[in-house]
Length: 339
Image (tube, rainbow, N blue to C red; front, side, top):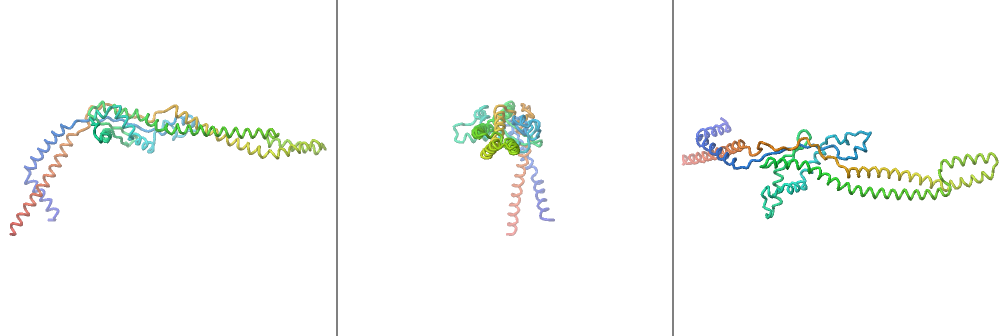
């Protein structure tokens, strides 16, 4: 017989030998654990399910008109990135602070505010009571446990409602700054355009209005005057061509700069309008798949599991102690026989 088999047999023999004691221990531990489980205040669980959208920007509806992009579709569900962002906001301290204040959780959880670490205590209680988990369907389950089933449901629904407010506040921090920056850039672009326009006016005062058209017509007229022997007309055209040569390059450079500046300003203006739309109008920041309702069945404690696990643990400890006792007894007997 192997050593492992021998040890297993010894354990079985020990259990059989001490079965009455083990039975008494099992019954007593089961009764005690059941009584203790009755002292535990039951809690009810309320659940709500959210799904993030692919985008929350109202401006995308306008800007993507006629150019459908599923990524920018406000009716599309979000991906892993949006789920991670939603979880980060849900686990943020501002949301916890809102729940603590709205539901007066310091009183509800009987927190001693005179304690040095009362803030850690209240946040710890909120972390235990309110949890968020990604589910297998690319959604997020909001779970709230409390002794009052309606209180738990109200908290879960408040998490859903306040998520919109919190995310908008986070986004608008950047939106307001972006609007200010775009306003400055548009003003600068307007100033550049005005400066270029003023420079073009000076060029036009010197007789250059459209370099290409003027050059073509002057060359045609110069050729006619030369061929017809109109030397005075040819000389006049020659002076106009000299003026065009002097100012034509400046005109074309300013015209190109004006076109570029106007295009750049149009882009800035489009971005500015989009930012204004997003700042003034807001879509829901999530899809609510299921609102929380008051549960009619407690979620905690599970008395059967408490009794079962407690009894098994106590029995296992008792068996170990009995085996140790038998081992010490056998060792003592062996030493005595040798003597």
